[in-house]
Image 1 (cartoon, one colour):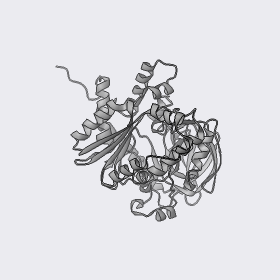
Image 2 (spheres, rainbow, N blue to C red):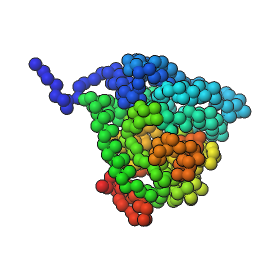
Image 3 (tube, rainbow, N blue to C red):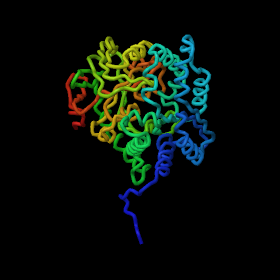
Image 4 (spheres, helix red, strand yellow):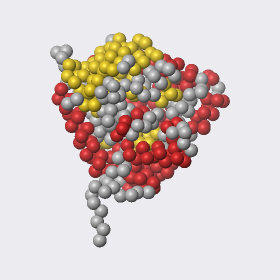
Length: 420
């Protein structure tokens, strides 16, 4: 009789792995509860995963699954043939409906996999205007997500256009297969028991965030090539990572995968210069080699090798767009970083390196923030904006110090690795 050892990972077909990814998205990512609705967005190519997630959602007792699919070719048609004056419009009716669904208790799941350079050859002004219009229309829904009023998560699907961006020298079929290999590994689908593996990973991330909460640092200082940045932390800030409990009482994992611990910076206490360590793919535009200077929490100078015009337009979105809403620590040895892959996708690349985010802060990363008004959150230092854009500033050459209230410094990271 053949008994499989507990630590032996069974051979699985692609279909089995895709089904496991769907199960992890529903059970770990969302924690979907019986009777709960689900609103899902995805690229058209991700329909196989959409179907698997829909099946697991109904098996978990979900009451109604609504999937909204997007198409890259249709998006390009707008930029190539749409009238110039129409780029200040967005589907407000759609985003209003999503916000109403969340207010009624629906969960949110986004499947990402878009071409990271889809709009790189389009008019930057049109791209910026379309992004700004979308951000304004989406804000009521974004505030419910960023405030963790609901349980939500993000997962991924290896589309051909994304795969070719990551592996440009490979034939499409091989590129897609290699990208799927990276997705499954990073999402812990290759574990003997992915659900149990995520439970253990969440315990480790909680231990890390508990330690940082016990220190109550006043600020973090990042130093390394092109970077000397002090990020003041919000008053009564709270570190989080991995699983989190939303205001509706449901525990979810907002990102599949996730390697970060994160908190809320003080919007007025960020100073210095910082240089990105990985490209940023934002709404179809590649922004590379970002370098910005902060004074009093606000970006006063911004440079980039590519995508600078789009970056400048992003910074003009609103007052909060030039300020930070998140700071996150990720060890350089994280599985995603160790893979050596540059995914050109924030969901993955932000979990390969420490990062900051322009724009909207997470209310849950302020003590009792979930019950505060926007004005009360602002008084604690939490930023407010139409956008929330993560970009990577960590690497194997970056040191991070925790700055105490008395001004003393303690080593948190050295050469990208935890120093305690």
